[in-house]
Image 1 (cartoon, helix red, strand yellow):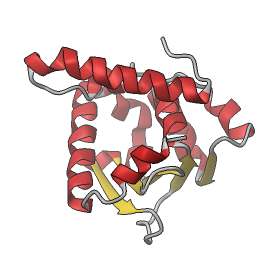
Image 2: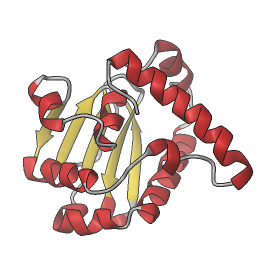
Image 3: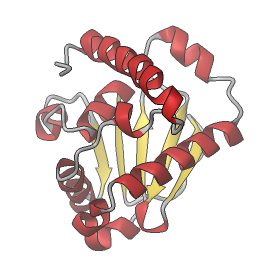
Image 4: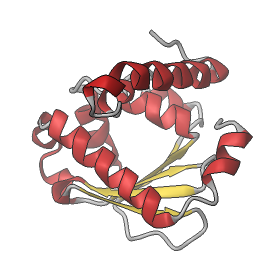
Length: 168
């Protein structure tokens, strides 16, 4: 679970700011991992909603368009083919391949609504690329990369340890 203080700090963030950060992050990740499209095939055109149950925002991805739309929790989300819900730390760990998606689903730690084929295609695509959010989302300026990675790494380690997920 996201610590309450982080949720409290994130809640008042202006939606355009969160939208801009999410779009910049997605653009960077897709540029770093172009093979993601190859693995998704036609499923890349299907909207995928990512709904962290412990965060104030939902994210709807259309990877073929290289777009993400952010909505506040409780607002009407855009139409989606598949929706994946769960604690944000688990969702990020799943994307990085640190957890077994089947185990988390059948253990009821995450839920999936809608088209299961799209969810499976996303899982297979994510497993085929070396996603590492600390590395991929560190500041782009060379002078800030090491300190940025150190801070992001410490936050990730702490959050994963709280969930009992191994962090290597």
